[in-house]
Length: 282
Image (cartoon, rainbow, N blue to C red):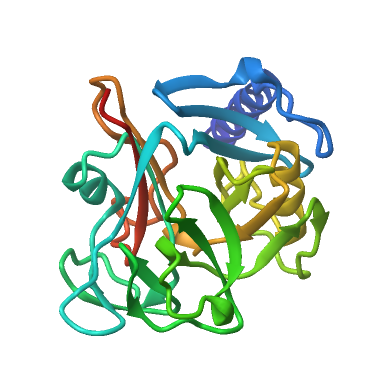
């Protein structure tokens, strides 16, 4: 009986700690309200970062706000054959290409934690105007024109790629001209991209999910988040365990801002394409 009482006392104490922890969490930003400027901090010239709780149920958001007139955009280079790349973790990619910030991008197969393994792209990859993987017609892509402006485009409408500098494939459109066009979907971790009016401003967000402190988002909720962050067009990249964001800049060591995919121990998932940004040389 004494052992049972001690066990119940420990459980009661643990419950108290959990309640106190939840009570101490900052309130979540309500969906449909703009994200205030005070939340943003500079990573490097042209790249700002913010981390905040949002929505109901609550989710944890990591966001980048990028001035495309002040940064260079880099993407994972092609592999040895059409439609293939050599798998890298996001931190490996960021270090290899001297990025100040980076996120995961195109969906792929197979799922792996082995660096250097050949991965097959489920969508377009275009680098320096050269096409390296076939467009997936039902999906959209984030495209950077030769003048540096960004847009969300249907992969089947890219043409020969001659007007584009970099194009990385994703999944579905979420926003078009400020209107939510997202499909119904379950909540999950997600990586999303939004384009501001005029195409010179870019928003990238990673929403954590599948854990008590962060429920993840549906596609419609992700679209609302992009609206709250100032986007007029938006799309989803690969999500789930692939969703990841790294930041460094200004002499700081690169780090992941969200926990890696669940595992024992948790380790970075190897990705197909990554999209990175670095401040232009003065």
